[in-house]
Length: 143
Image 1 (spheres, rainbow, N blue to C red):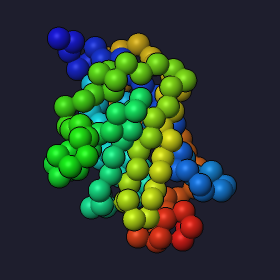
Image 2: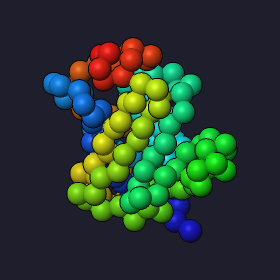
Image 3: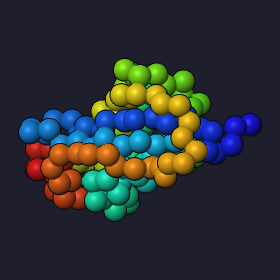
């Protein structure tokens, strides 16, 4: 098992879909970051509270932290699935949906997969554009 500091680094660009001009963040995270932790990171990046349901879709597989959705829809738990487990490569993309009512779809693109960095502190926001939308504003059409 690789040590935490030996985990490769993923540079991700996270764009909120259907927003013009573009609203996005670029981050770097360790490969041992779980999808559940990535959800928490995204919540901080866009200044949201995290109290709505959410899901990730990676390669046709849906992940969530909601046990009812896991049972009812056959979704997988995101709590133990790391970025490394998903066999991500530069150029690949996956989606994150937050707040099923408002429909905040995000496109997450893997920009780079970097070698382990034992001295770096992760996650880190590298750059981005525009303030995050208000929670419960009605989604992209209400923004």
